[in-house]
Length: 477
Image 1 (cartoon, one colour):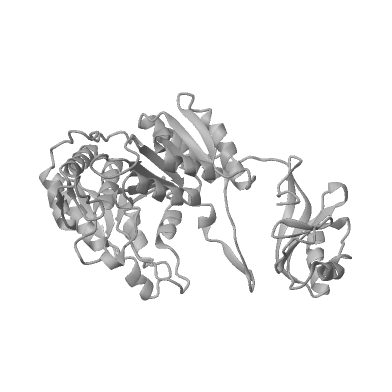
Image 2 (image 1 turned 180 degrees about the vertical axis):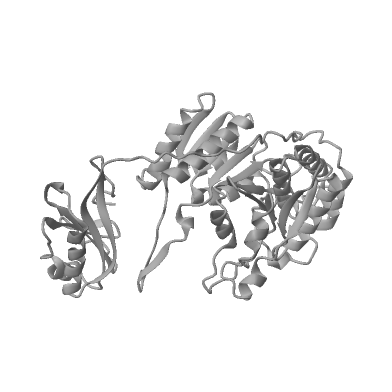
């Protein structure tokens, strides 16, 4: 078999140690890979690269079939951007796949039957990183959910379930509050679920869904979520399954893939030969399956399961009475190598080879009638509502009239209540008479009118109707 080129980054903190152990196991198992190393992370941040990577490294990553990455450290402050987010979005790695499995009784857990796969959208949501400091004491983040991005991840989740013999796909979202963003994600879930009649589907509001996941994870199979919920709850799921240190993840796109442990670089454990390499090793197993070496993937995974059964454990999962021997990073790797060719006796053996090709998504955009009928103008003003209203109540342009003022999403005019606590960011909503179509020039004149009375405009949002339905939140939202 010709060797498959892969990119390898040793990372920071415990990264070099767990990568060394992982590559040693891959080599011993006969993985046919050609390694191309890149330097990324903390050292590059301190050399002035804001995203922790020299731009020249993109060509290396792009020229290989997969990227195996150890954890990296992002320095605090200084405007540094997450390298993980940069890589995922730049390479279009839209699907983050995190299996969270119980290894009871060999790894302590309250959930011995847990076998959940979390499929997390990887490019959008609040992780787009579009934020603003609008006033001295008010910041905002923009949550982006698109039809195209939602279609890709939801269809991937159903296709994953189909290929891996899973019975159900569950959606977690919060569309009782975020009716447009999470509402769109939910709508597309319902649409795509109809394409997979043999797979059960259900949906949970994320707060009660998270509670159910923590309490009774065995009722879930594949869970698909927008980016932020998926990031948080995949860590929770991994921990309640046994340990965050045991979980690997795949980041899959149409033109590339990255594989990594879900834990961080743990710099306080660096250089001590104590870190558990299992998360990175299981990510490497996912990588081998992805690049067409399922037999080697199965061989390594089963040797790892056998090692757990033998009670050879690193400090993070070692438990008196269950574990037999506490070992370091390299010793654990050596133990896995000794078990290559063996299968577990109690735990379910791993079988790979179900990744048959990869989805290519064809997005067909919708084309509703779009009608501009107003504008929301956000103002920075430190003072009382009565004073604010007296300064801006006369502002009207053409058919546009001031219809509402809110503060933190609560209506304060008309019909406001004296108990409402207000901050220095105010939203003024203007609609046209009878919701007639307006032109952008009218909205620009509204902004000029605020400037004329020396009001500080910090943001504006145009208001549209789509096929006659509002494309903006209600008066109280």
